[in-house]
Amino acid sequence: SKYSVDEVSAPESGTTMQTRHQNLFPTSAPTSHSDSTVEFSREHIDALLNEKLRVKDTHCFMEKVVVVEEYVKNLKQCIKWFQQREGNLVSEQEKTKEFNTQGEMIQQIESDLLHVRADRDRHILQVKTLSAEVEKYKEMIGTNEREHHPFLCLSTCLEITQLLEKLALAEHKLKLSDISVTTTRSEFEEQNAMILELKNRLRDADSKIVEGEKLCKKLHNTIMELKGNIRVFCRVRPLLSDDGDGNDAKVVSFPTSMGRLGRGIDVTKNGQKHPFTYDKVFKPDDSQEDVFVEISQLVQSALDGHKVCVFAYGQTGSGKTFTMMGKPEPPDQKGLIPRSVEMIFESKQILESQKWKYKMQISMFEIYNETIRDLLKPSQTSESALKSKHFIKHDSNGNIYVYDLTFSMSVVVE
Image (cartoon, rainbow, N blue to C red; front, top):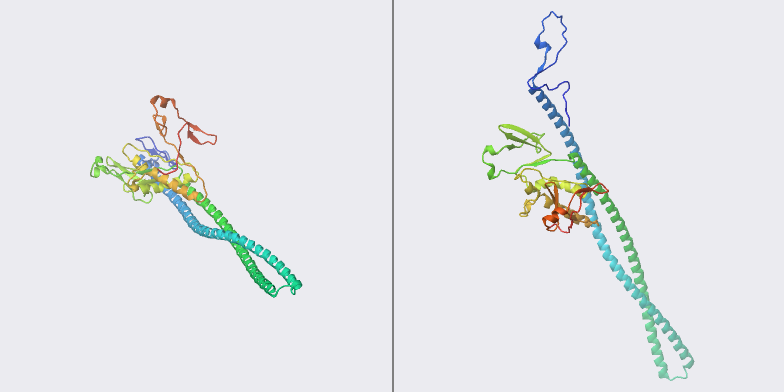
């Protein structure tokens, strides 16, 4: 931002600025130096400028804090709403699973119903056959009753009685089959109606969850834009044995004023304090997890489709490698890169359970003396390395990529 002080300009070094007033007295009257000249030293002007800059920066910072707090409040409400919807979705999924099981039972019942119907048809056929035989025997008895022996007539009567009993049993089984078919059909229709209702409710819950995810992403990236598309963090490493002992080695201090708390450091050199202000300052006792909390927001933005770049800058021994890579053991010493990869794969598993599809691939290269070297390419001789040229290009969509770079398909975190 640019700042200015109205009607005040800095004079050259070693001079003073004077503002002349028109003399309203006659020329013969003496001129008083204290009434006609206003003198400002260069230190006075610098102090005024610094005071104005500090007041304006504090005012802008407090306005941004109010806006960010409002968005954070909205984001928390959205997250709470999303968690409630997610719980409802889990409950609906359990009910759907239960009804799928009932659907399988219904299919089994339908299969049994087909068998019952086949038995019923067979019984009906038997009844018709037996009825025809009964009529036949009745006719035979009516026409030949006097001609046959009494014992033969008795045998025929017994046979007819048995046939009648079988007929009654078949009719009873037929009635039971009809009752079973009616009951099974009504249960089947009720289950189908309930399954259809659950599917509709599940579809509505899915659409609401998608809308909630879109709103959360929008609020998240709005907060990222309010914080700044380009942010500079400063991490101060602990003192080492080579740094010396005593107060002489402690040249960095952290201000406690509200305007610079957590954002500023003071560096003392030759007894003079030099203040510096960043978007975020990490103290020596801040852990790797504390640093990743800030970076994880950028990882989430990358998962939402935004382009993100994080790089470490500093002199040799300042702790760049430890911050970016860390140590594999213990787990709390892992750096930003392994933590970011773990977060990406965790998000991938969650979204895959919601039927998202992800394809992971990775490339690694370094730029040394303005030369791009592919770190995933198989070992090669110096001559072949000189022949393979990598250079930065833009595709038809405006995306930046490195030509002829090796990509590896990634399926696990390791």
